[in-house]
Each structure stands twice: as structure tokens, then as C-alpha cells.
Image (cartoon, rainbow, N blue to C red; front, side, top):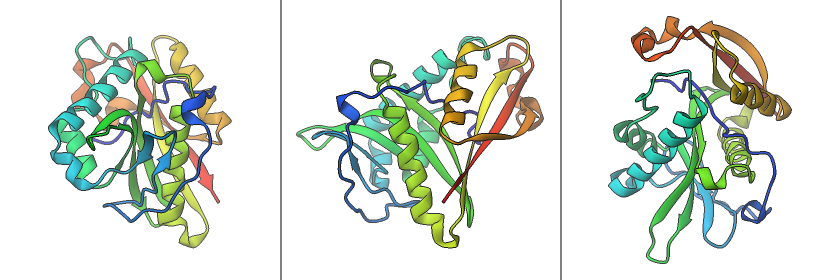
Length: 227
């Protein structure tokens, strides 16, 4: 299933965990290249090696981060009990190199996921971003903005040969009530250079999800030109 929403969990201000640091080069690990971005001595953003897909604890933790974020930020759009993703879906993204993850690396070599964003190449000059999520206790400190910037840089590194790269993402909006978080989210993306290029009835593309919605819902595709 495509990414039906790209949630930033509204990350505007920045604290010490996301202070600017150097970004060393790294080899390609699967789909798109992921140069690790060190946020402090233990927390980095990277595209994990494909072998991380076989780490059940790592995948389960990612699933929990994503589902917790979307359950909160899509409250009222879906009926109670709806889960945004599954272990199988997340493992597939990790194995294909299409999920960038912010993790705290432990002394034993393990990874504790703190957030993520998916990156899917659509063509020679276009990619789709999605599944932007951050653990609740770190929302509001700029980590989501770092994830988005990392994903855009990956797209430039992989797709920038022509000099023009477009990134796109979808944001769900209920049509039967005003959703304050979605309004703030759209403003956040607009501030970062994204513009609405299309609106579409969500059920035209995902009719199987009709029983899970509380009412009419549209998704708005936002697009940004990277140079």
C-alpha cells in the first residue's frame, strides 16, 4: 500500500539532540544511498543495512513508533483499532533500503528506533516520501525536520543527475470536520517548500479502507522541487 499520509508530528523548534554536525559519506545500502547523519554521539539518521529487516525487535519497535504516531495524529479520521502499518510492511521497506531511520545506537551494537521516513523512487527525477514519524517524547525538537532533510538529500544524491528532482508526499484531510493537526501539518510542509498539486478522494484509490473511515476523506498531494 502506498503512503497515504506523511506525518511530521509537527517538529518546528530544535534542541541539543538535533544540533548541526558533520555528515560523513557512506556506501549505498539497497535502494537509495543513506549517508549517516550524526545527531549526537549515539543518535544517527541512516538507511539501515538490509539485514536489519531480520531483527524482529528492531522491526517491532519501528512498527510501534509509526502506529503510535499515526494513531494520535489521525485521531477522528479512522475508527479506533486502525493500525497504519505492520511488521511485514516495515521489514519489506528496510530490506529494500526504502526506510531511513533515526536510531540510538547502544554499546552492544543494537539500534533503538526513534523515528523514520520512507523514500520510494518513482522515476528518474521523482521520489515519494511517507511514514514520517517520531517517538512521542522527542516530538517538537526538530527531529522530524532532520528526517525530512535527510530524505531530500538522499533523493538529490540518487536522482540529481538531471539537475532537477521532485519529492512528493500525501496528507490525509477529513472532509466532514476540521482537523487542527492536519492544518498545522500542511502549513509546516508549505513553510519547507511543499505546495499542493492535487486533491483526490481517498476512497477512489483505497476503497478497501472505506469501513475503517469515520467519514469522507481526501488526500492532498504536496510537491517540492529540489535543486
